[in-house]
Amino acid sequence: MTYCVGMTLNKGLIFMSDTRTNAGLDDIASVKKMHTWQVEGDRVITILTAGNLATTQAVISLLEERSVIPGDRDPSILKAPTLFQVARLVGDTLREVIHENERSGQEATSTFDATLIMGGQIDGMTPRLFMIYPEGNFIEASTDNPFFQIGETKYGKPILLRAYEPDMSFEAAMKLLLVSFDSTITANLSVDLPLDFQVYEKDSYKFRSDGRIDAKDPYFMQVSDNWGQALKTAFLKLPDYNLD
Image (cartoon, rainbow, N blue to C red; front, side, top):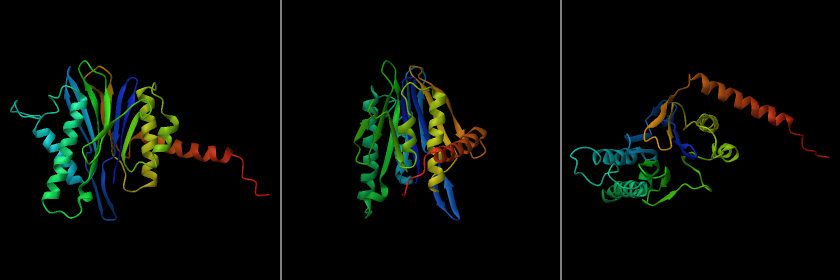
């Protein structure tokens, strides 16, 4: 399982993903689920992946292959004129990979499904964020739906719904996402550190910050401990239910 979030802010975009792929007692593995393309001054694109690992790796490999030399290789997400067209290319590639699994005689097509979050900005246009489904179709983030989650979404969603504000700072958004991920990690062993993150500031056409947060990160440890204690304190302050 996995947990990934892409979020729109007035200031730009922010992405976070875990790295857990297996969580058996003697089979714990991790893999990067955040993939980026950057052409300074022209465009930045980030894709988060959830689902069958072979499918997602094949999709990313195809997108990479079609974005490098020779220069006339098409279709390429680095040549598409709009992020809507990029989303179409990514969706078509995802559907292509899943269809190839069907043609190879696999009986359970759903086993090879994957869902993606794709966002970024192209020069002269506004930042955009999409969620792309296994069928290749997609939806776009809006003021009514300003963030997307994929993977194990239910544990981390309540805090996002309660605390998200479009004008919050990147620093506050990082805190919010870390609380959301901590809640998910606490409730589900199939999601775990390290966490990858990227921060993109509107109209900069380069990533403002990115990195990896592991279990020894002092800020994450502080957030996790303080959030747990804050929940207990808030619970104890609530009046007891009257059974009489």
